[in-house]
Length: 348
Ligand code: HEC
Ligand code: HEC
Image 1: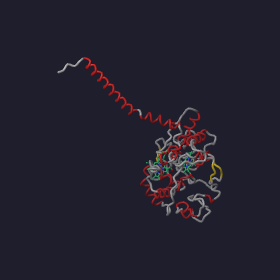
Image 2: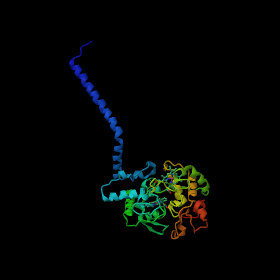
Image 3: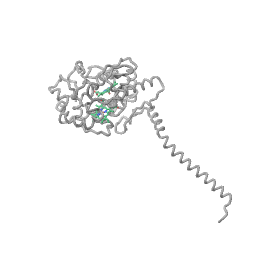
Image 4: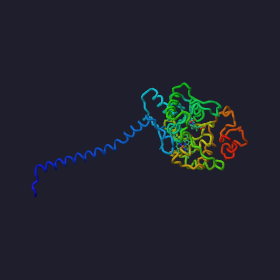
């Protein structure tokens, strides 16, 4: 065997140490990449929020965005104004905790949360979001024949969708909800309605929507969460719902937006069964219309709407209470077929 010079030994030793350092460096890098991506993602999201996410221009188009969410953990909280925004978000997500039948602030609503219908605290694309609220209010609404502020519009949902009473317009709660909506819509230009805001509008069917088919579909696809009698399922503390009711005494009343079958069908098409979204719809248009017909033919609280729609010719085609400016029945205005009615209108 050839004698190895001491200098070669030193060289070998150095090489060995170099290799050990390299391998342990790699190991550390791998461990870091497993632990840290989430931390980095959070920071990244926070930066996105500071930069106006989720309302950036390219994000306003449904086509190139995944489900946007505004999570309170990434809201910037560095002033009293920010705290008001956060409280507003919490009021939208957990309305009942503060304002439901066992609410900690006041007891003025039915146990539902705004978020039950304005999904992901009013930020989900085609999930009845608030993107266009700050940019389009105050606006004229034919239902009240007047100019409505954001406060008036929020009050409407309290009195109809939450079958309750409106909070005082000067209350901290009202201010907080308005501040939150302003924050959600802060990057939308005044007067603009971004794509993906509000609700889907489904095409009218050639036939009337059918509650009988709707009943079968309901049992199959909805009852597991919303209950066999549409009663929903409450949290163990009985303060709010895990699965909100679709009819009965704790549901929205017959003056609410969802009581119009076009709104109901548009909402469920893009959002139900829970987990569906506009890019991943589960129901067909026909199923959505038939489900609307069934759910909205079940009993629910009544709201006196005598003062609504002073100009009856402006009633929406699917507004289910007469009198109308045309000769179609209440039944056809509720279930359709809508195409013949639409043909008589200039403003479809
Ligand atoms: C049962 C479902 C439901 C619940 C619960 C509900 N809303 Fe609504 N809300 C609707 C529907 C449907 C519309 C759209 C109505 C329409 O287009 O005619 C709407 C519209 C609105 C609008 C106007 C949006 C726009 O772009 O014009 C605001 C603001 C609003 N709701 C606030 C609230 C607040 C605040 C709460 C909780 C106190 C709430 N809503 C609870 C169903 C609901
Ligand atoms: C896996 C459970 C689940 C299924 C199945 C499901 N939903 Fe829902 N639904 C929910 C939850 C949860 C909410 C409230 C969302 C929130 O608060 O974030 C909701 C909300 C709603 C709302 C608005 C709130 C209300 O109570 O009026 C309607 C309308 C609705 N669902 C209709 C349907 C219909 C129709 C079906 C069947 C096609 C269906 N859902 C299937 C879980 C479900």
